[in-house]
Image 1 (cartoon, helix red, strand yellow):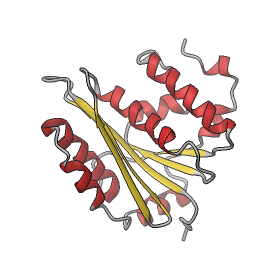
Image 2 (cartoon, rainbow, N blue to C red; image 1 turned 180 degrees about the horizontal axis):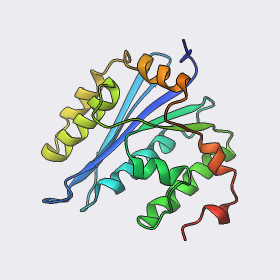
Image 3 (spheres, one colour; image 1 turned 180 degrees about the vertical axis):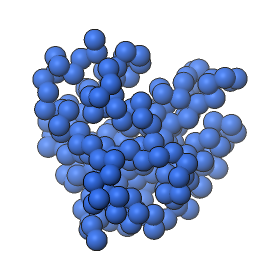
Length: 188
């Protein structure tokens, strides 16, 4: 069994009503040595799902900038995952990707280590599912209920996630992409 001690685990998710209102928000559920913290925020202007997914990951780094422990970031966005690790070119949302570069560069310069993990959306991984539901609720109602909802999440599902990691499923290391020069990482 993989020990979770001294690893900061973050589930990030963003959501937006891309059709009607264009309202959106993001949220993060983080756990560290049996302590949990949640963050959620609405977007003040019209937005898209992809923008909110990027904002969620950016805010993981902002909220962990002083940690000395490895940060494991779980997301269900193929777009953010593949752009973050360098598999896909970053043609849209360049301002948010520039912010991502700045934040992650700063994080690494301070000695921070991180890995990205992709998980399927809406599968029965409790933390991911609850986070996703909370943000959809947040977008539709714009209430503070989601904060209480997120606090109710337990960490039992992490066993499943880390079993998959040990099997080598859906793992990406941010460091491999980050090792490229800044020029190689730029959007083309």
